[in-house]
Structure formats: C-alpha cells, structure tokens
Length: 371
Image (cartoon, rainbow, N blue to C red):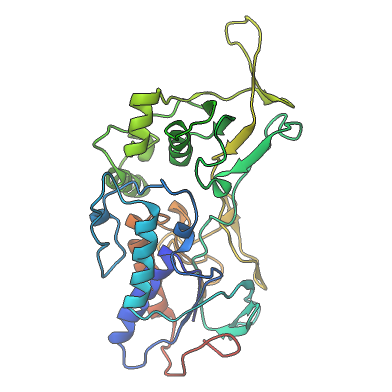
C-alpha cells in the first residue's frame, strides 16, 4: 500500500503499520511518499516563535514520547520538527522524498494507480495524509483586490523581521492569528502599528488550560457528549500570547468593512461615520483546506467540501474502501489534525486495512514497483 504525506499523521499511521506487521505471518509492504525535501512535515515551515498548544508529554505520536522541552512554555516548532525526524529514523520508516504524487487513479478494481513525478505505483490501498498547509484559504474580502500593500497568508509569515515601522493588519480569530499578532507586538524593533481583527471577539482560554482540554472537548463533541471546543474558548494562551496581552494590550477588534487602496475602513456602529486606517500589510490567518491529491476513476461523494467517509470508520472513504484519509480534521476523527489526536485516527485506519487486505510477502515497493 501507499501512504501519501510525511508529516505527523503519516508517521502515526506508518507506526501502526509497522506494529501490525510484527504480528502477521505475511506482512504488508508499504511505502511513504513525501513531497518535502526533509522530515518534519509542515513543522519545518512557519515562524520561529510558533508554539505547540500542549506540553511535550501530551503531544506525542504513538510508541515513543516526545522528548521533554526544557525551555519556557510549550515546545516550539523546531522541537516538534526534530522529534518527527527522530521518530522517522527510530522506526526506519520507508519514506521516499521528495516525491510528488500527481494523481490517484482508482478506476481499476484490482489496484489503485498512484501517479508520481518519479514513476507510478500500483497499490491495493492508499492512505492520504497530506495535511492542509499547502492549501491556504484566502477569503474573498471586500476591497482586497484594490489594496496597494502586501497581502500574505499564515504560510507566508516567517517572523517579524522586515515589519519594523510598518502598519500591519492581522485577520483571523484563531490560534495562528493570535500568535502572529503577538509575535509582531513583541518584536524588537516592532512594527509601527499592529491591528488584530476578527469576525467575532476571540476568547482566550484560561492561562492554565492548554491543548489537552481542547482535545478532550473535541472528542466529547464528536461522541455527542458535549458542546465541543467552542464551549471553552477560541485561543490557547501560549506564553507569547499571554505576554502580548499583558504587556502590549493584545486584543482583537471587529473586522473592517472593507480594504481600501491604502488601508482599511471600519464602519461606526454608532452612526458617527466610517473610520479609515492606513496599512502597509495584511496577514490573512484564515485557515486552510484539505490538500487532497486528485482522485479519478471513482465518483467520491463530498460533504462540506471533503470526501464522505464512513460513520463507523471516519478515515475510510464511503465510496471506495481502498481510499483512506487521516489527519484532516474532525471528519477523519476527533482532533485528528493535531499531534495529540493523530494516534486514534491512524490506528482506526490501519485496523481497517487489516480487515481489507490480504497481507502479501513481496519486495519493498517504490515508484515503478507495486505496493
């Protein structure tokens, strides 16, 4: 079989494949195809102060705990990247990179054809774990086409260098927006102005609440046992966000009604006239969509923009059991897009594969060979 992707969800799934193979007389052969040049998934990108929402002890992949983080607060992105690279090496996972998958052709009931820039692979099943980082969502916002400054997305933000003296609008109500706005406010030298704007006022979780509570709430919500994450708050108050809140007055304002050629305009809810503010940059922290490889040959039904999956196995396509999806959000399992939630959906996917496949003995696959 083929696993597409090399980040946290792909590694969690391959761990369970390795573990399942140890219990089988006829092990499954599989290969992991990653289009990145180095291990670490999307954690190799982002900005230097990007932080996990949870302590290292609660952010581990199955089988091997994340090493403790000795610095202040929760672990930074670099710590996570190094852990993922070490995890891959520890279990000698069969990752080939960089290999870009161009298409998954499921038209042949005997095998799924995975077309890549390094050759084709025939597989009995394909597990897609490509994440969302490579498909940023940029909203159609009034006046955006007329704005004369820079417009970036979270994926384009690599830290506060280059923003000194500039006037920056950060748009979004989630964790990325809060962390980017905090990163800018705490920079030395800082921008001339930082405005954080969101559709609704974001609610910071209490300082002693981290990603563990979010995972537990998401799990209860998927099981129909609670209101979900929204009942707790919107933003985890990691150390940088706390400092910016306490020392720089970090707080979101309502969204402007539109961008203008030189900035943004806010309506006055009291009827006293619109207010316009000059801006140099807009950073859209407006989320992502699943970066799914095109699937041909089978009409996958969709719901809310993503393939429909089975109720009893949320990682499995409802239309073709040979196609699996891991790590894209709650539709593939509660909190499955997080380190803390990746294990459960990965285990579910591999359990399904064990039921689906006859585990043949054959040479380790790769582009140009069968999997």
